[in-house]
Image (cartoon, rainbow, N blue to C red; front, side, top):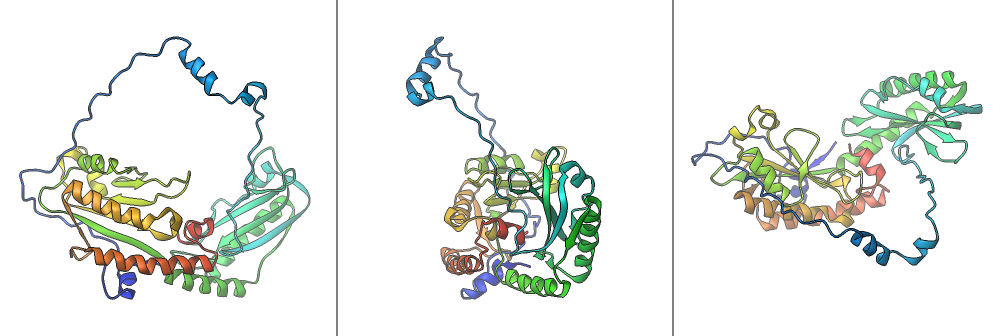
Length: 351
């Protein structure tokens, strides 16, 4: 359930840009690929005189800090794991608080129903916060949420029935009474949500293609690092991290995973890279589209690459301008649905 760049640009006048780019093999036109430059040795500095650091810290410290000791306070955050906007929610009532240990003991073995993730939260009897059950805590109520749609499609009756079976078993295990929403109503809501998501999901991708000399994976990593990219969790994937801790990356830069897994990656050469932006994952205020466009420009310069669509056609500034116009409309539509790009609900729905 996604709107590709091809579809997005078609709305702006037929300019076609990306989708999923195939990593083709190109014939090298020069002797060999560009390689990473060995890093220079970092300069060493003598340590400051004894006592200098402490003295500087004392000068910079707030006078109040010298007289009022810091008090550690527990940080408690409201849960964003279950949301009535995108989840079918079952409520589980219990006669008396249930221990976290008992709740964990009866958790379903799989936290999915078909292709849809599910979560069980407990209402902490001490703090009043909804949270994932944890040892040493007691819970006065539980709720279970099943995502109604994701990029695999809308929730169907078979998946919902599996959810009911798993949550009923959990409720029986903790001695609770569970109430489920009507299946037909949930499935209807899931289809409507899926239709909205399908027409408002944008995953933008462009191709960086070597003009002449190919690159080794190390050369690509070195060039990308100069523009803030770091190694991702998957082979052949570099990411531009979000300024928000724990948030999805703003951009991804990908190349052939087999090249990254080779015994000697530097013996291989690359001629194509994919630079992608998953629009719903990053707030519009962070200007991810501008970062995508600027990264494409900077990387194409450093790598001596052309910026192309999936058909190999070179893209001009008019293509980016057309996409920008359509993206602004998309951001507005998501916000009106309470699914603003970068919000917890949007990140969960468009995944």
